[in-house]
Image (cartoon, rainbow, N blue to C red):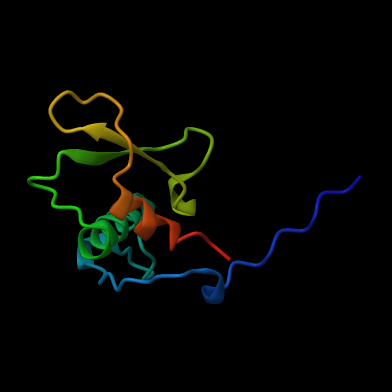
Length: 109
């Protein structure tokens, strides 16, 4: 049995976008973004969404999200695990309802 073909990666499959300007030091002589910069782009986009749409205050929210990259996925794919923990104890915590609703809106079509 053959697996279903993967859908092409097109902009219409994504629910939300954020502009991230490149910096001179992040681009090589050919005008390509350096590989190490890609992970920071995903981090900036996720933080912007959580702060702007999900009620996260990075300075005072009692439950915070920490990024954990899956060792089997290259960072350039943007795949990472966002683990929620209690700010004080650093123990696992439930995702606050407002944040869960905002994150569910980002599920790819």
